Image 1 (cartoon, rainbow, N blue to C red):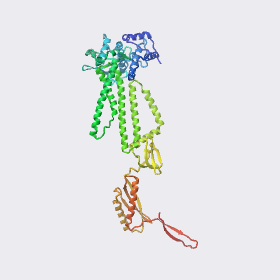
Image 2 (cartoon, one colour; image 1 turned 90 degrees about the vertical axis):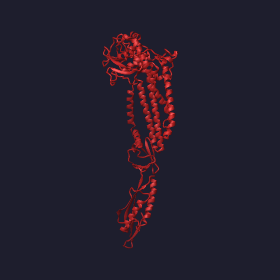
Image 3 (tube, rainbow, N blue to C red; image 1 turned 60 degrees about the vertical axis):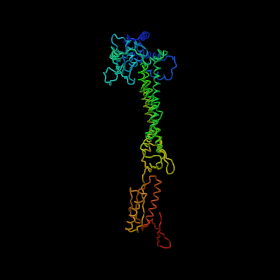
Image 4 (cartoon, helix red, strand yellow; image 1 turned 45 degrees about the horizontal axis):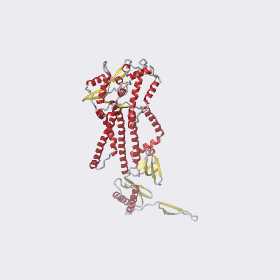
Length: 591
């Protein structure tokens, strides 16, 4: 790892502690020595047993702590040692390369009560009292400052170029003083060495000085017990931490009570108005209360006067908890939606949807958890680019190795969405014919007429031509009558007209297609074709019963006319050895 020599050109404004560090460490520092010093400083022995609730606070504060310590170690380099990186841009010893790092470093300096260090983040004029200016800015931030969320702060050296401000200006929040709103503006400066850094602008500092910021007690100062005053944990005021916990619990209690009362009122009034029970479960009350608390807690902390050094890290914790609660709320809503869909599927006898709904239910919940995790870990400062790329490569490999499984899964979704068949339908596809008994995630099962079960993968089943017999609203009735050729034309005409009237007026047929006609004149018979559509919405068994009834009544109707049924005739030629003549004996054979 190449050495990074850092130029400290603000050594006259550094704290005595940092100057002593420079004197002790010498002029040359390698990246390895800086890393070792950072690790030694971060791994201090614990002196207190911290409650579990402070775990998230420590995680949220870790990026700020690491940034400030890195800044302190960087300032330990000698002014004479300067090295130019590959992009010819010097590294700022105070970590002021971006607006986000400037805010983080300034808040960390305030937490350490290091006014000389904090003054390096201010664009001070000649003759300004740096300690007094830092005190005034801190007082303004404590009593009415609202710094933008850390994710909204630009982490680019050039800042946010789309904020409609000058390229060297960046708005990072506001300060409210007696109904006067002061914009917190950072300005990008250029040092004599050529590197650029961000500071609080002189205009912002002048506006704060002109405002009436007389020292007044906040709610935290008024109601804090003496035992908690001037006590710190990890550089943060115990009084402010206790105040934050008390305010958070109070907000949760109020929000939970209000939402619970609204839920009880809605649960009582909704059935009266809509004549059905309220579709919202009581399980949404707690996550919704946490979401509302996360939205209101920052303003409550500003009103109570919680110090900015505690308020900003807690704001990050609040956002994380808010996203947890919002994800929890969405999971409850997803559960309610899919449970209702499954109940409706059972009620409508569409059981094939249940397995797909169950799968989609799990996929949606997993997707919500993944997105929430990405956002939360990203807000904690973790670089997820490599992890997401690895997940993408792993997902591609999994998709290539599970092509058939994905194909069957997509096929099952298409079967449920398109619904060519349902459970209980009688259908024909390919060389198989039978009743659908199950539509699963991977395959569809049918019971054939031989009572065997055929399992077909959904990917293949959805691509086949499927003939659904159950979906028929009527059945095609088509049969032939064979009449002997001895019937004359007048009799044949009367017979056809009579059969047409019989078919058209029969109770089992409809007007879709009713026709009796001469289909063919053969040597031995006349073929009479009868076509009709029979209403049989109950299925194939109902059609078979109605078909038998219609055929029997049709045969009875034929008896009313002087016609005869033609039967197939064959001739047998018998030859004997005693006579040369052949006797032909006609024989009627019923086919």
